[in-house]
Length: 614
Image 1 (spheres, one colour):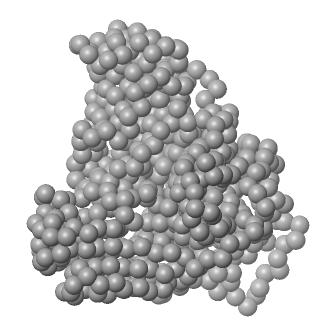
Image 2 (cartoon, helix red, strand yellow; image 1 turned 90 degrees about the horizontal axis):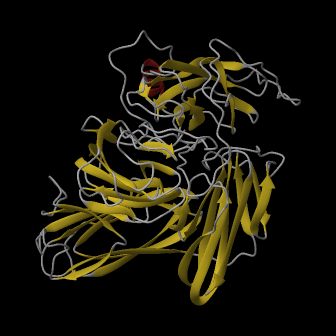
Image 3 (cartoon, helix red, strand yellow; image 1 turned 180 degrees about the vertical axis):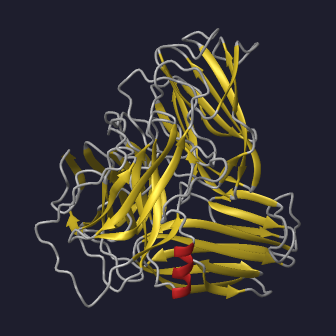
């Protein structure tokens, strides 16, 4: 998230176009209808298949109120030799007048730059100053920021229950109590409910990019406001989800009820979805067309009981069985253009609820493979698909029946999580190959030639890095392979890095060694310098494994994911109540880097991870 100082001309441009760093105008046209994905503090946290803490209280609207500024006990002395300044860079999400369903959590992220000559010191905060207070968050800690650095600041907010337009104003407060101008704002539109629904809707996740989950449904109490992913490059090509309800669990016969809803976010409790539909033993299907940008998307579904999600007739999630409000997720690579999403659901008995949404993934378990029927990656793609690895030896054949055996090209893209260190990359090609890491060309073998191997070393910082592999084939044999490994020595302890946000962003505020990952902090902070809520931790360790299959087991309240050499093997980055372990079988031999990432949103905090040979 940190970048070098931008040229002065660009800074001026940022300020001139800072739509959300200046006071909003009188409004222009219709609002952006983009039911948004909510996201807990500094990242997008989807819902979980386990119980979550008590529901976030509804916001009390406090127009034109200002928080009391209380400087810390040890206020830094201002440095008269430098200047403090902040400029707007971009709205990362939630454009002005974004439509967000009532009573739904969402995250607003501003991208800003330290445009002064002073470092923003420890103890600085992003504070709510006036306008509509949406939710309970009024202060977000900011890690120190050097001059010229660009950071993302994210606040978890809650859309009000009543329809209307709401604006919340925020500013940077330094550790000595000074508040910097300009002020930044987020303005949303809460729509008028168009569907008849029983009680107040559950605060469940909104779907990203035009697929908001503000459909009919009611909350019988005890549910939790569950954050969901941020909005992505998806827009609705049709007006609403076309729903059909059946008086059986098999989606057969004539629908007894048909309706249109703006999202898939239903909590019927023990009641009925509507006239003619029984409260138990019913089923339903919804269909809607969306315009997607090319990318890998993670689809989520929370259901009691069964659910299936299809994209263009292909099942992405298939959990057609009884369940108690379980959450499921699956990734799908989608080409640019219009695609039809269909959701199928059935209810057996007892409570009934359903939420479906998706977000574009920041890291992916697969490569996005784009293939062209020419040698220069030009024109429209012939094929787009998920590839588990760039490890192909097609011989004199073709990657797919839709492609020629000679004269084709391909591009594979993937965002992966790396631990800090030196990596040795090995590329095998016949004919040409180029490799980019974070947009930097690191290997250029864009030339005809027989099968050959090239290796290179690259130092990588901890975090997510995007790798792009480009390849072309002329004639005869076709080979494209890429692999890498980190130069490692086994370590005896986990390096734990603590962040004052739920997204592992910025600089860690505490770093220390821990022997095991087995913590139950309850409602307390894990460290004196770490907040009790909205924090995250990255645990890293190099472990020397004997050749075997290992059972990885992880549990958390709230989200957790586990990576082996940058590959995700457990991914439950969503709120949960630590009611069940998540497990994965992993074949290992030798030294490997294990990374366990964890975040806590609110209330209780606990995390556990273990492994053992099977």
